Length: 262
Image 1 (cartoon, one colour):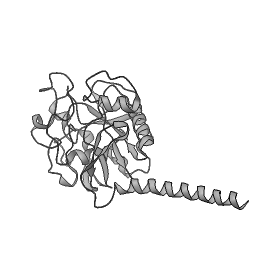
Image 2: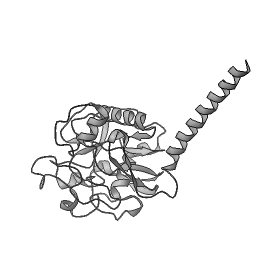
Image 3: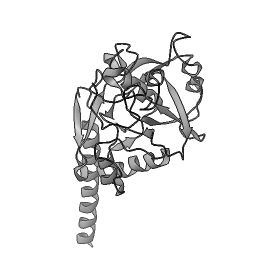
Image 4: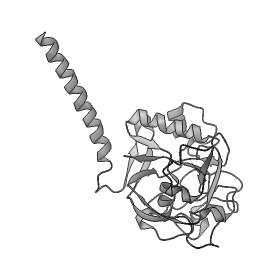
């Protein structure tokens, strides 16, 4: 009987230590002094994640006339720190996690995936790593696109000159391009203006939802898209521009990137 109790206690202790170690590994990447990035290497994924230090910022367009009507009224927001993909999820990375066949060049951003598909990718990646991968909220997306605490109030992500940072209707030759060919923004993040639209976690609605207690990503069928794409005019590639589609939509103009949160 003593031996049974002894082994039961030992097993329980090992489980507790293992769980704590897992929590510590997750917490360590969000250390308050953390800077820079890490590479998610599970299954050879090679996904570069950029650290975004949290802080206050203004979501949306402050001055009427500088954007579309759904970009204002701007709202004050505060974000905790998180990591975001340096690049849009690629065809190769999608195949690694989802086991689907690649239909384009490996370094092309994955596209023709629904919001639901993108969520499933995040869930599977989280299961494999023990970390918390998600689609970015609209706030996380815009804050990172602006450069976080390094925000220089650029019109596009990283520059006021769109051709430096974006594939859009004028320069894309009407096609998607491999990730990372344009200049990054202040945080080292690529293609947040143009190339493909990116799914966000949120349901599309007025910014006044920030005053609501409802979980804004859990209701509604129209989901936020950000960033503009290869077939869009420059105005759609601004960091404040908003768009949307039904969660089941699969378009060659839509992809996504991930965030990792505590």
